[in-house]
Amino acid sequence: MKPHHWPLVALGVSAAAAITVVVLLGGESPALNMAIIVGLPLIVTYLAHLASKRAPGKVLFEFRVDPRPSWYNDAVEVTGDGLEITAMSGGGRMASGGPTKPSYGFTDLLGISTRPAVAGEAPWITLTDGRGLPVPAGDVVVLRTTSGEQVLPVEDPQEFVSLVRSRVSGLPEVHSEALVVESTETGGAPPPTGDRTTQVRGPAVSLTGPPLAVRWLVGAALALA
Image 1 (cartoon, rainbow, N blue to C red):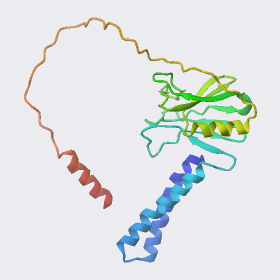
Image 2 (cartoon, one colour; image 1 turned 60 degrees about the vertical axis):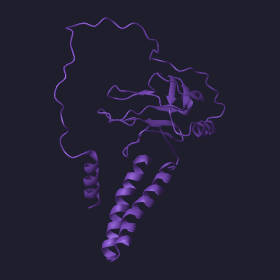
Image 3 (cartoon, rainbow, N blue to C red; image 1 turned 180 degrees about the vertical axis):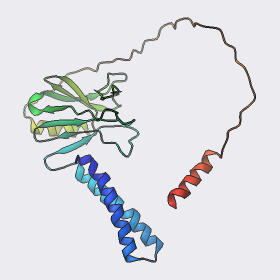
Image 4 (cartoon, rainbow, N blue to C red; image 1 turned 45 degrees about the vertical axis):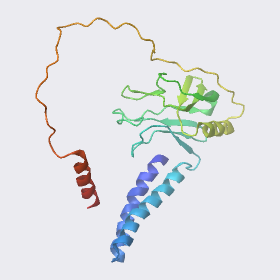
């Protein structure tokens, strides 16, 4: 099991354990019962999250993404032999063809450094379903390998570089520029084709159903129940 799956397993196990404790104790205090049911899974999940960062022989670095869904598991692991990348979503939908898992041995690394991300630069990885994941804003790690350059938008890029340098002695700096694929130049738009249309004003259409605030209240009440 991958270390980044540990918090999910810990959440499920601790939630079941918390419910069992409440049932066995038969506490008459609703506040105490709620504290056990909610507090125990949160504490255990947080501890599992900390432990997953440093599995035996491995150090896990997640990739930056905003927003970060609860099932997000894209990360790179620094093992005793090299780097193992797992990319499946980039914060969006899961790849239909399974995760993309490139790996590099320490002997494949020719250089490493950090640089700021550039707007419009080429995707840093392509998933199995053909989607290219964009490079998020902030500093990124640039690896020069025997098969080319690899951009890694990891959290804590300086810590990542320091760890890799501690595993591979004498790794030189990489002086690389981002490959921009989106042009910022603007030009004349082509002339419109087809029949000319005119705006038509029709009757106002009223929204159906309860407003959004009422829906949130109903959803919250069902969740609490």
